[in-house]
Image (cartoon, rainbow, N blue to C red):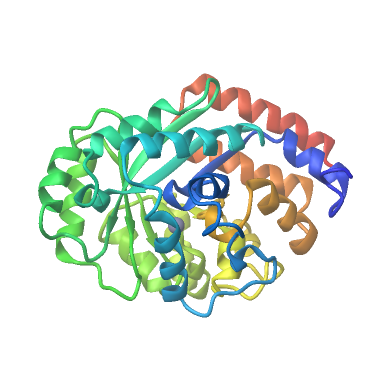
Length: 336
Ligand SMILES: [Zn+2]
């Protein structure tokens, strides 16, 4: 049976040929399930029920509990990060992904023996030839206690660390330490991102743009609820790294058909498409693009635009960017 039996083969082939980026990917949340099955074949005999296409989480707490139970047995050392990253990147390379931004949970350094810079290096070293990988340290909204401030100060000097991302429940406020850390990070030459506008309202998107100074927002989909926030994103050249299947399964939007991605693109907001936590959602980047086409009616030109945005938003060698943009321009003419 052909791999694309469930969707048009010409669409599958078109998506496969698109040079793509993955710019919203939690390394822990991307752990290949096969590695867990190798670790404990009995406990992990079956993938989680959330892999079912129609699955919808009842709450973010349910998601949190599931992911912690799956991650904690595996992520015990920098070596384990390397093994996971190597398999994740191989899977992405097979989908013609050329550029990856991935974050890891920096507070994990409190629980494992390896230092954070060793984890960054372990992930970076797993990048295959032909793929640019940039590693971000994920901080948590309410986790600036114990050793974490010192770890952050140290991280500003980690050579291979591309930047910082803000994770954590959006119901938690943006604490005062955050803006200063984000400013110091940029002063140190690091990039800054933040999760907002997923479970939190458009005001949260405004807050990370205005108070943290980020120009990359992970999710940001609920910006659509406030035209002034949409205008702010356009004016400031903010990119939203959107994860459509995650949004549907977590109940952020009712369906791919009703996803605000197209409206945000039409308003002039630069949006990319990524998978977020494929360990939990059972999704691939190919599923995201094909889902947008089959369920939300995205045309070939719209899929190209989404892919193009990733190469415009990312930080990569100009030759890498130019080669991808040229291929995308040619594919846009072909369509599917
Ligand atoms: Zn995320």
